[in-house]
View 1 (tube, rainbow, N blue to C red):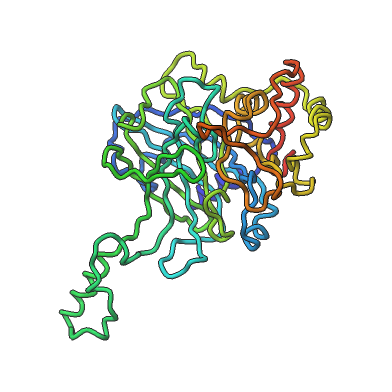
View 2 (cartoon, rainbow, N blue to C red):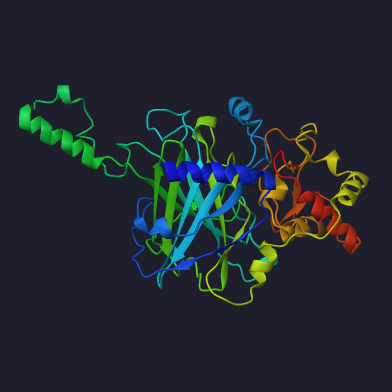
Amino acid sequence: MKKFATAVVALAIMATSALAEVEIIAEKVNENLDVISHKSRIWTNTKFTPVTLYPQTTIRFNDAKANELNQNNTPIIAAIAAIYNKDKIAFMIKWPDVHQDYQKSDSTDAYADAFAVQFARNFSIPKELPYIGMGSVDRPVIIHLQKDSVRIYEPNGNGDIEHQINPNQTNLFNKDLEAFEKQVINIGVADYERSFISEGFRSMTQIKDGTSHSHSTIGYSGIGWLGTVSRSLKDSYLDLDAVAIPVSFAVWNGGKLGRNGLKYLTPWLAIRLKKGESELVKSLTEVPTGDPVAGIKSMTTYGCKGCHQVTANDRENFMAPALKSIGGYSTADYLRESLVNPSAVVVPGYNRNAHSKYKWYTLRENNKRVSTMPDYSWLDPQELENMVAYLKTLKGGNE
């Protein structure tokens, strides 16, 4: 516990340095990683790397209370470690949280603290990785989600309702009653662990075909969370046999009604598994060389604030996604693509709070979504780099 507290304090001090995208070196081990947990001793001597998770602010929630609780969110610092053997890869994430919130079965307005680990299904073209939030059309992601949860009974898939009655209403006494209550405990489901495949908002589909094997755990230390995920290096959904792989992490604060897109997340992080040159590592650790000040002028010239809320100080504008944290969880390559080819990734559906006369995209005959944002592929290369450099400074209150 004391070691965890010390680590969190040290990481908080580092937050002021606005951590750049980092490369995380995965350590090769011989231990079995099938059922590794946050309690496993193997993590004691594993190197943890500090990373920043940024508040996702693209679309405003249609929940007044949640918006109020999260209006002043700032980035948080976590620590991540990665290990692997010949068959599996495992991650551990530690992040601070002063209160424990868990999934309940008797409440519709209580939400759990949780974390997720996200993998790009195809990362052969580093400049065209999936949208960081939840994948994008033709660019799927695999997501492993773990929530803190109490024991939940029917409906839990067991079809057992005979044990879901008040013990005082049974005809059982003494040892028979004790046996009944043990059976009740055993049929409850206390672990909320799910795996999904997703190609954008509203497309998340739980993986239930049995071909993807993963194991995750979560534990509360009193001042923060420890979460682990282990999964196969290769299965029908992912092939992680590469020099480096892109992985993203997300956490939710249940106490602030966090769920779905109301979360904190990292950009795509480069997890190195082997030595050698890697275009992926170069892309994910790139620091733009443009001039941010010149980038501000260009964005003003082209009227970007007419549709986007660019900084936290700007008025809210629902004519396009908010950009006030975009530099935290987006790579430089993603931002370039968004400027020169805005239709490459288009969020399906419209924000309920959006301007009623303004659509974010139009549909062509083949149902292809075409963004209403103008194409800036005509920009001078240096001006483009200046705008990317500025956008990378937008990090949820740290701009």
